[in-house]
Image (cartoon, rainbow over all chains, first blue to last red; front, top):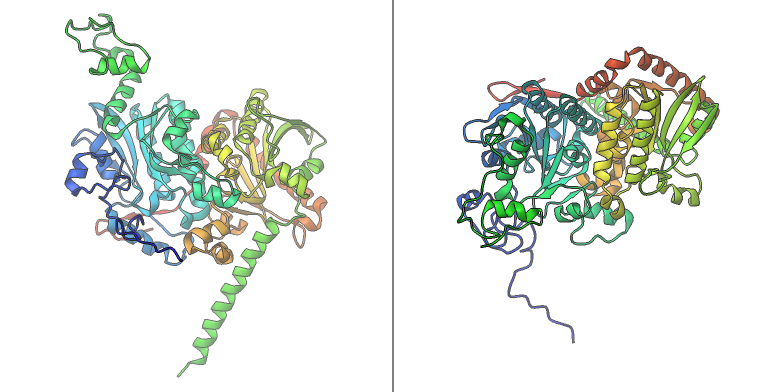
Length: 317
Length: 294
């Protein structure tokens, strides 16, 4: 007898990302109102899944309110090859701009992060898959220029499928151009912190995004040169479920840390502090801050969290 | 009613597009021709002596990318190039010219050696791309490509790069950042293979010919877009027809490019190279109404 397939739980196609509502968690299926999700930094309250974050919202999350000033806002992609695949490149650009309200897949500028002046470059995956073309390259360089000119650190947050094929060889050259900008930062002695969000692949991870003085990633972000599908199709190898994920990259020595989004701003602030000149230290000549008598025990206070990271615990009682 | 002149114009335009499409596709096929001279074929003809630098001093020796200390017209240079294989066993050993991270680590080692001794660097670019395997990923393929590009950005010695076959994506660019970049007339240089582009944008890798025509990976297009400095002529029918002649033509072009690169003061070379790549790209500026102008 032929088996009868019955599936009353879920209609077919429910797993199809195209049919799932963007505010429905793909891993636990919790559904959120948009304002709820925005308030939760687009992290699922039930399971901790990190939803994608647009560039402007990301800037709101990490830059102090009212301090962001955009650079290169008026740059728009041109179409040097008059490229047409199934649709003309110019149509795709127009759609992307209408859909995201952005001029391209990267927003650059300067602002303050917990009071410290910082140059910022943030990508938006919703704009043509965060692909890197001429405008992204130029905007990243403008952010690096600002960092060098003002002697302030640069923070980038990436989310990209790679180079923008519609600009072919010019898109490839943006890899050299942005790495040149990193070289400029290094020459000037300006710190560069690279935050890798899901997904950062192809030409972006193979250029500036990998070259941060500090490289940190969001949980479960896919970070690889070739995506799992390309690897399987070209080499016939099987990829593990954790292939290219942030946690495996940390284990394999490609990252400094995996930081949940809720802790990202605090972690960035801490790094900016560590990279700041010695005279910024308010308690520099007073020695370490003494612990209060009633300090809570391990796992509770920020001090314990830091000590815990070094495998140390504070004496109890 | 059909006006004959319009119809003729339409047909002629279609014919010209078809002809150009064939030309582009021919370059793709010549660039990948099995008898096309590879890095070692040129090294044999260009250098009076050469010693191969092997191994990345960390993991292994990647034979898809070779590095050499070589004598070129009376001076010592460091040569770096992808190397495909001629027969099946060599192709497998050399992974069809697709380096793993250790290949790029070896290239960085060679670049550092060149900088230490003030030797010019010559590179020969001929790869379908960096190897997209699980092991390569686990050992940090993306990061190593980025670091190799950075190493080429940072040196103060003259760097001349020649695209001699397939300039495939980041795996090619990793050793193609130089003061002068040359490209043989039938070589190709692109952000992705025509097959890969077709698979993603047309959702059908069989449309590679169409994709190649749309994104034009040819030397002519690269020169027009300001990505390369000069096109190097090949013997009639392609470099594989006469490797000696192809080597002579490439030699002339490299010598000239090297002279130009050497003319830049050493103290300014790093900034000049950075500036050269900084100006690459084409974009417009949106005016207040949101309309774009070039």
